[in-house]
Amino acid sequence: LPISVSSFSTLSTPNDPRYGELYGLHNTGQSGGTIDADINAPEAWQMSTGSRDLIVGVIDTGIDYTHPDLAANMWVNPGEIAGNGIDDDANGFVDDVHGYDFANDDGDPFDDNGHGTMMAGILVADEGYTGIARDVDLYVAKALSGSGGGDDETVAEAIDWCVTSGVDIISLSLGGNASGFSIILGDAVEDAVDAAIKMMHSNLTGPINVGSDVDVNLTDLANMIIANTESTSKITYSE
Image (cartoon, rainbow, N blue to C red; front, side, top):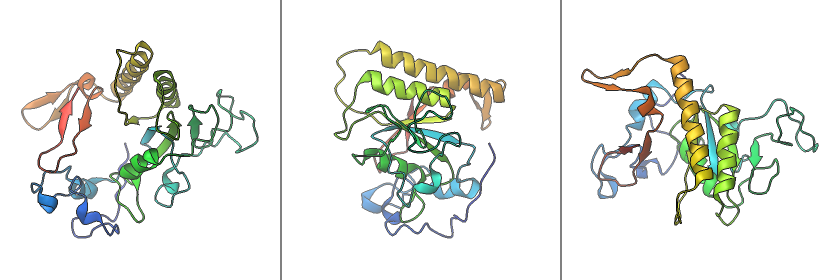
């Protein structure tokens, strides 16, 4: 993908007044944490802050797409006229200007909970707060209600929409008590992984060399999940 270099550097910090507290981005040992147990964000920003060609689909409670930290990063459907009640681009979704609300089956995925907006801010915030990749675009797939609840079928619909819309990355932050394996949700996730593998194979061939003594296969990358909230250890990877 094209590289978009910003004014971020290791010599200048973002204009977020609480940036110093974000140990996940840059850990200096604040809050009793371990120095450099972070994602090396300042070092990454030296190389890239993302690209408008990189699209992240946020499946959550929606996004406040008017928020000053997020508005510039919101995808706008060029084939849709807002509020006219017509599926102008004939994609099966009426008034999907910024995305779609699968929880209420309408074209306005505005966040009525706050969680989705928070997740979007972690990704791209660039005014009073600091996101990880401020130059990527966001698609919104609202699958959870204002109370933060939802069901497998609705989440699966949102995943399918992201896949057919051609998003590159899906952000899906869910929790709860699982009563058993969901075939509907499992199939949607499998389709998303298959699409990711096909996309990578269309752009790359063979393994990707990382360093001098390890190879990462494309199929491994398509299943990689990153998760960590501790300030004392590096991020952990799992498939």
